[in-house]
Length: 409
Image 1 (cartoon, helix red, strand yellow):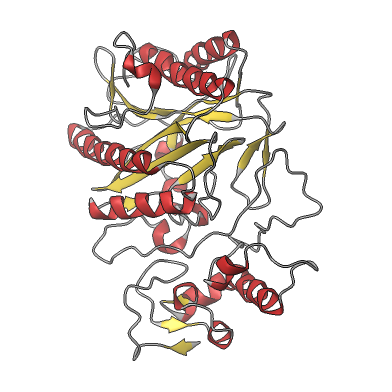
Image 2 (cartoon, helix red, strand yellow; image 1 turned 120 degrees about the vertical axis):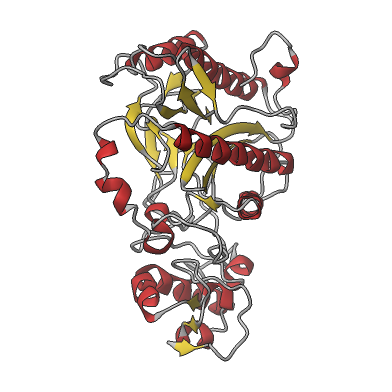
């Protein structure tokens, strides 16, 4: 490992933990790979990252030879700039996987190097380790915490910043913009507000937000694919600020979409709205799924069963789990002071999902489109407070909200 302490790396982040980088991979130097994808803060981080990092060398070598599986690599320029396909534990994100049954037209594109987080930004433990060990071991995985007034005040601030960050991203969505550019906007807006983008390195997730396009249900990884006219894209933003997380997402139109896509997104928005209207002390968690499923079914849509709403606060994910589908087995009732998300994922076809080889990207099993909306909610003594509610300054991107009779959440 080459020591770069005498060189000016500027604000180059460690590929693994995002601390200031001091060392460079010698193989990357030999291949003339850009420093931003070859830099590490320590020998320890370099060794921990080796299984995924070494794939960058292979990809670049193939590019330099001008051949990938016997063909010119369509993403050679991106790879030459230090972009990569590989994520964690050697999992592949290549679009050239002959044995993988892609369910729809989308394919994996290269992802850019990890973004830098300044040292002054407070961060969760996974920022350096990739593993939320405290979260996994917490007592709040098995019981639901009643938040204190001090916790609620911090949550309100984190959620407000999350809303402002998502609004900034929404204004940037248009044909030709890559989801990686959306990730850059989310990352920089979060840092500017003094927050840390919660998804970054959470279980080794490589980016600062999730961008799920068309048939992607959730956890889409921002990459080099430009958005196209007629796409729908969900942007999922989570902000860690003052020791608490705020979590929300919305699905946006890219240019003019077809009627089926507009109906899907509007119905998904209504599913969340109807679920929120149910929230108050004494309501069973399982009833949320009944309301969402009823509305989705009436519109000829299906509800994803693999992912659910979750408790949130000082932990990113904790109890309660809140399924969105009918006849679920969730136990317990809502109580004042609880904070959780509701985030229905609604499909235009079957409810079943498939996982891409990258270990993150969940897609519809039939390749048809999916949409999602999410809010972080506080149960009050009399009902609910939507902590991530739209602001008067939020962009006017949903046609149905122009109807003053429609509740805005």
